Image (tube, rainbow, N blue to C red):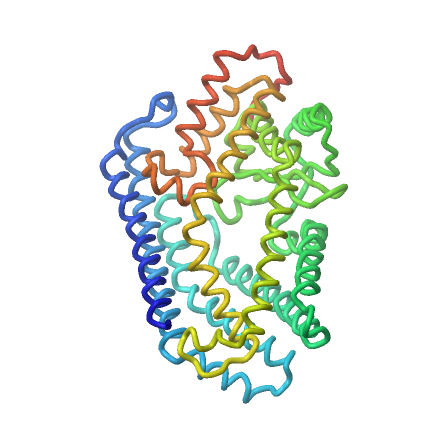
Length: 425
């Protein structure tokens, strides 16, 4: 049985690398072709940079993945899991304390292993292509703060979850699921006010007239937004983005200052209208419900498998702690979930297309969203030629060339009588 799981993992890993290779070969073959409709914004030099940037990032990701998978195989199948489990038991005899130590030290080890890849990606690749604006001091500050916040949250949540297991051994799966669901929603409320300001500085949007246009757009969509903010993303990178944060009455719109420098007001409104579409079409609520249902099923199945007592034997380990069995379950879950990736990606792409249509109906300006996507692709050196099979597995959004083509079909059939953005950035 142990050999069967190892072979299954290796087959899935090889399949993933084969998809990556297929995607890169497709890019090399078509990377010099300017997609229809992109001629005014994309030239041969930009395409060359895009191809080189994608290849360099892919090589780095491949190196990191190879190391991670090698360590994972050694940890699970090379006897390290049992040794680590015994070592943790020697540090603490407490069920809760040993559980916290087990996951905290594993997470810290993974964080340390990621440092060289993070540094190389930030200060070599991102620097080379003009994206990185972060100083070493700022990188270190972000690293220390993010590590501290993650360690604190992980310790508190793990301690509470293990306490629930100890308190209710027969129904912990239900109470742990409810606890994690509550924590997730709570973090959505407090993150904009407690966690995000640790890393970024937020201030009201200063572009003349833009906040009024955004609020008019939100009012037309029937969405209440407490604040419209811009964030100093340019201190770290020239990459651009915009997003909603918070939940319920504490929803906020956050615009990267880099986005404001690149887009017209109409394009900013089109991007935000797309995000509003996710709220109005219930995508966020549906995803949350599906995620929680899957989590509930996962908790119940985990309870049944741990209660069965045969999990350690699946990996050739005579016995394991509760924490170690959770690691085994996570590994098995990843193996089982791989074939479901295309379905998950398809559902996400379907929602993105629906949000695009909503944005066009709300603003009456499909061309504004199309040009915004083209600018984002150009300025972020996004791959314009993903292999179709790779996109089906990994793309949560439709490839940008497809999105632009569909938007321009809408533009041909839809009069521009919606809410328009005035002025430019």
